[in-house]
Image (cartoon, rainbow, N blue to C red; front, side):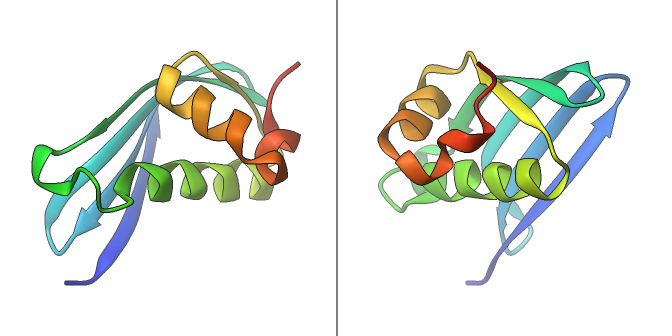
Length: 96
């Protein structure tokens, strides 16, 4: 089944979702600090999607979004933080 991403942001809160068909299989929430900085609060993968790369895929999508929108990210979510630390090519978006 085909995977796609959705993104929503309202009132300084945002959500990335990885969809498989119409089903949400991974989600990442964030809070906006200011116009150029966000905090990644939480990443969650549906039980039936664990081990399929869904978690890494949603972090990769957030990295693409952050670069395209010139955003810096403070990853308080332990999963997102670990993924960003492991991937040296992604560390340019981390808020220092």
